[in-house]
Length: 74
Image (cartoon, rainbow, N blue to C red):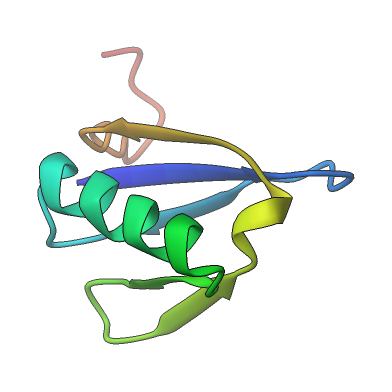
């Protein structure tokens, strides 16, 4: 699943592919917010991203779009 994380005062969003379903991701975020700890996300390649929960503007959950190859219009 692809997630996009908007961070306050940052013009670019963080885009990650993760192997976690949306319910588990929401649970992790809620636990991090309640404990005051950073939100830790691990992507499909095993890289971890730590984001302070008080700096998260939004999180968009969704499926990744198909990547196009070549010059075709389809």
